[in-house]
Length: 190
Image (cartoon, rainbow, N blue to C red; front, side):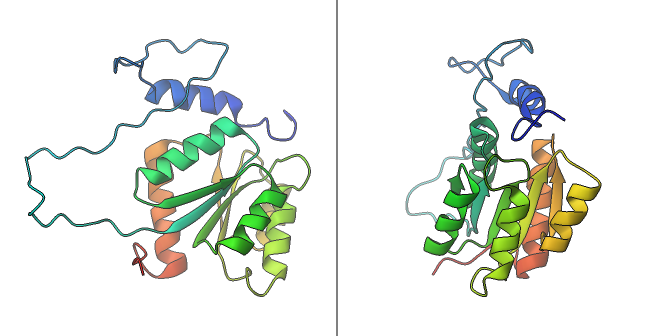
């Protein structure tokens, strides 16, 4: 075992390198490096010209909290979710994540299983033990399997996304989980 919070680093390198571009906009060709380059995801741009007077649909969104001690993984997940139009909050520890949940009730929580201090399992247990946060669906992001996944399931996690994950597949899984847990494809802004 790689140790708390370290299980996903090789996947982040492979995933990030595959999706990275240089500052000039050219694809990054190197897959070898000591540092992990930041994931850069292309923003949507209209193909046809449009004017401000045209009606352009505004995407509706969900509020999603990402709790992960690994900054690179956290930034990558936040970026992937933001490109789908979601409002994304992040926390670097279980304690910070619980404080964020109390301040802003998200529609979905993604939590890393292996974190120092409060583990993802403990976060799920505390969320499910509180009547105000218990109904919020929690998804575990984990490179673990077997007994750890079973414990998270018993604690109340509704789904598991194994690390490493493929960005398009990750987006599809999140959309499916939100559809099933909320009964909506997107949240309507109030």
